[in-house]
Amino acid sequence: MSAYDIHKGDNPRIRLLLTIVGLATLVLLGGMAWQQLIAGRAYREMEKRQTLRQVLLPGPRGEILDRHGRLLVGNRPLFSAVLYLDDVRADFRQEYSRLLRETRETLADDEIPDYRQLQWTARLNVVQSYVDEVNAITGREVVFAERTLIRHFNERLLLPLNLVNDLDKNEYARLVEQLPVQSPIQIFTDSTRYYPYTRAAAHSLGFVVLEDPVDDPLIDDSLKTFTFKAKRGRTGLERAFDERLQGETGSEIWRVDPLGFQDERISLAPPRQGERLITSIDIDLQQVAEEALGDRAGTAIVMKVDTGEVLALASAPGYDANRLTPFIPRAVSDEIDERRGWINRSLQLSYPPGSTFKVITAMAGLRSGDLFPDSVNTCRGLQRVGNRLFYCHNRSGFGEVDLRRSLQVSCNTFYYTASQRIGIDHIAAEARRFGLHERTGIEIPFETGNVIIPDRDWKRADGRGGWFPGDTANTSIGQGFLMVTPLQMASFTASLARGETRTRPTILALSDSEARQRDHGGEPIGLSREALAAIYEGMEAAVGPGGTGRLAAVDGLRIAGKTGTAQFRADGESLNLAWFIGFAPVEAPEIAICVMIEGTRPGEALAGGSTAGPIARELFRQHLSPAEASGRQTAATGR
Image 1 (cartoon, rainbow, N blue to C red):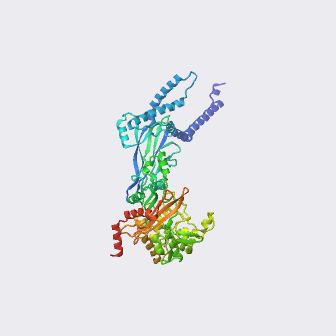
Image 2 (cartoon, helix red, strand yellow):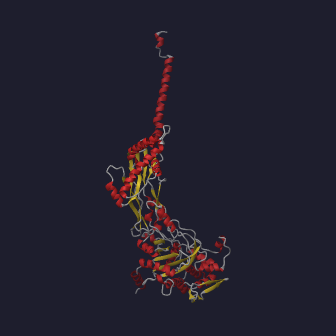
Image 3 (spheres, rainbow, N blue to C red):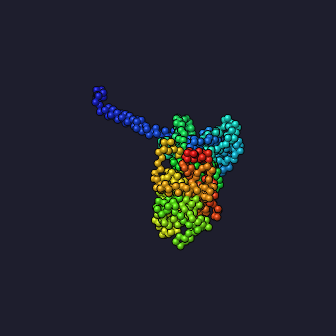
């Protein structure tokens, strides 16, 4: 082989070597490009998930105010003694080493320690030692549970571990003063709901519970996320307007070390407080309603006639919502449950309305032409309907009774007789015209739909057989199968005072323009001026001398009212109900009131006039003082 042959440029072996090197270079460059340009994103996501953590910070809830801007629900500081576990890692290691030495000394040579359990025991011992330090200063006797520590360590490692919750002002001051400067125990400040008027309007306002914000839009699926508990509305306005009150969630992004502890905060987006909610409640009137009800089971409702705004809605027995925050103790829950205090009796339960329903029966008769303002019936204390005797509440009878007097003294036999001419179809249709067959639609959650306006079709569909004349007689005085809520009766009373058939109640304050444009969706009552005047005059006489509602009277104020006493069954026992509905001033109605008191034991003497009437009087007196009423009456008469 010559030198020329060796150095020829077209040597096939050189070309093969260059080809192999070129291909290898291309493969290497392609792999590098793949790793950098395509697979790099996946690696960055893996790195991000391994080294970054997100912490969500729920925003403080918005305040709830009464119609005059007074605070009904706010936020108070919630102080807790906490540990950040990252600060006590050295303590964990030291305690673990101590426990491991002691354990090995007690084990046989062939036995292996339970290293995992020793880790948890060491951690719990360290945490409990700091809890004991707090106990010694505050006087508490908190014992920390291992399951709580395990759950926190696995699910909430970046968040502070609560050692002692809800410190009062004295405990807070002692801890700040006595804890060593270098102590890892810190005072953590959060917020919790605060109800300055304690029990007032508790059922309407509602309360909150602590929940994980699992559906928060800020949750980043690419990051492991830790969340503080968010406050969610469970009942009342807190539930109905939870989204508005919630506020805007903030977030922190942390870089963590290989064990998951904090290393460096990368970013912070602070939370923002939720919106304010202005209610229609007048807290002064609400407190009068609460005090007037006292310990009796029942409800008192005050509503603006023109707009349907609820000025007071009290239900008893109730509860102090401050006892339900930051969490609901089991003992408190059991106590409220035993008193049946969770129930909002104004709208969650339905009852027979008793003689307050006679106003509906009277209007049904007047509109059907079977009853007239000057219709007269002789009351002898009882009336035969079909094969049964039906009694008046005055067994001696009232003698000659016209429409006005029937409302004044609440004569039963007048309506027993009239109902047979009017018929159940007209009575039921009139009740439905006023919306007594359906929910009112108020913003407060859990309004019952279990309301009954009975007629032939309803009774047959319910499997109760045919309709009898006695069923009509019972319905005409608000008994039998009839069931309505106190809120419905308050709405009916406002409608009657306004001369229309519907009132849409609201618990939100309306602006002046909203109030002027308020459309309740009803129609004129459809009675002649003489017929409607007869209804009003009979109801006004009921609150005057000789009337069943005379204990609701306020000097100098013209009030139209109607009392009712009914029987209902609860837990297998027959109990009494006392009702009062009314509006004032008669010449220019401003407010409508419904009071219902529920008997708690068989045979308890309740009557609409003597039991519910005095409560209504206090409400009329609070909202419409005699001086104001006298001035309005003088202006109306021109005297």
